[in-house]
Each structure stands twice: as structure tokens, then as C-alpha cells.
Length: 194
Image 1: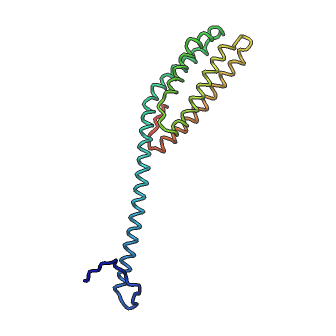
Image 2: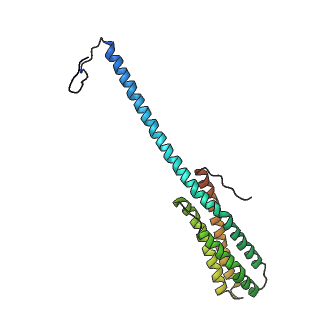
Image 3: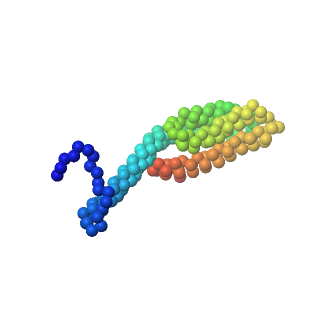
């Protein structure tokens, strides 16, 4: 073997009758194919790793959110129980007093806790925000009811409260459907009460 001081150059002319260049070509082709396959596999692994990191990150967001749900649900139960009790009142004065003393404070606590939920991702914020907005509107409807209701306007004012609560029900349906899809996307089991 001889030593050269410059770059090694491959012959530009291949002899048709020689087996060595053909074998060399096959080895080079196979080596290049293996390199392409390995590069593709590495890119696939990198993409999978990025996807797994994104899923793991979102799972942490979900866990932080889910840890607060029982506290917020308890406040929601308190509000709904107070609202049910108030709706059993037959007289306007007793009803208004119950709304002011029990329903609005319970709703205020629930809305404040909902607003304070940890929302560590844009996707979770987009799911959570419409539900909170619906409850904020319901709170405003209850406040307006207290300000505006008289015996003569009772039906009209109460209808406004019921419409706001219907919007809450629709927002809850959308929220639950969206949360189920969100949890599934990030491989988390959504535990819904029966």
C-alpha cells in the first residue's frame, strides 16, 4: 500500500468484467441504505420522545388541576344545596333573604375557587374558561334578581336566573365532554361520579 499526501480519489471508470467494483458498489449502497434507515429511526425516536415529554408535561398539569377538583366540587355542592333550599321558599321575602344569606355567598366561594384553579396549559384554560364564565353569569343573574325583583316582576326576573342556570348546564355538558377527550389525549383516566 502506498501513502499519499493528497485526498484519495475513486476510479471514475468501472470495468464491466470486474467483480470487485460491483461488490464495492453493493456494500456502499447497503451502507447508505442502513444509514438512511438509522437516521429515519433516530428521527422517529426523537419525535416519539418529544411527544412523550409533551404528554408527561400535560399529565402534570392535569394532576395539579385534578387535585383541586374535590375542593371545588364540594363548594359547588354547597351552592346547589343552598339554591335548592331557597327555591323551596314560597314567599318572595324569604326567598330573597335566603338568596342573599346563603346562595350568593356559596356561589361566590365556588366561583372564586374555580377562578383560582391551576390552569397550566392553554388547552386546559380553553376547556375550563367557558364553564367559569357561565357560573359568573349565573352569579350576576342572582345579584340582578335581588336588585330588580318585586312581586310584579317575580316571574320575569326568576326566568332570567333560570336561563343563566340553563347556560351553566350546557357549559357543564361541554366541559365534561371536552375534559374526557383531553384526559384521553394525554392518557389520564377521568373519574366521573355516577
